[in-house]
Length: 173
Image (cartoon, rainbow, N blue to C red; front, side, top):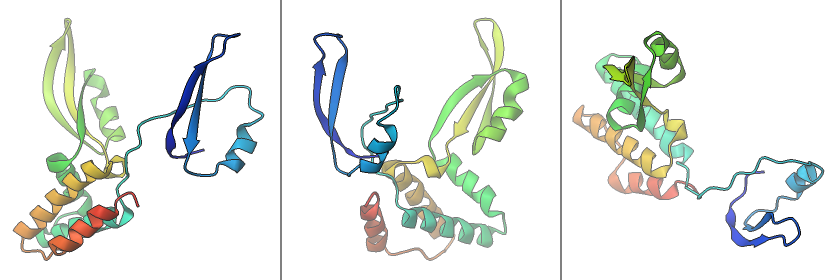
């Protein structure tokens, strides 16, 4: 069940002492309630709502990446990874030297930053980039703005600013 809504109330059962939380939902989850109603134990997640990026924006980003690749006579995937490196979202991790290649297989893009010593143990610090499919609208906006800028520098025609703005306004709708 994946719904949006808001917190309605938080109460404590006076007998058991357990917390009871209720939500106001924007969608009608009748089928999901019928499915989970008989479950004795559930895994429950509630988190702050963030708008996702639109498929139009993601599709447009890929169109530009392809045009950049064609202009530079390079591979589209290589350009995408380069754009993630310049404008993407990343985290730093330290791994055992023998695990570097395995970590590289799990992430979209990884930069090796070098050897570090933590509490007497040697590791390799990596900068790991998340793929654009995981981005929220703000993160995707930064990526698209960067890709558009790169395309314009290469003389590639891009959508007019008002059309780019329209796409940004459509994110999450």
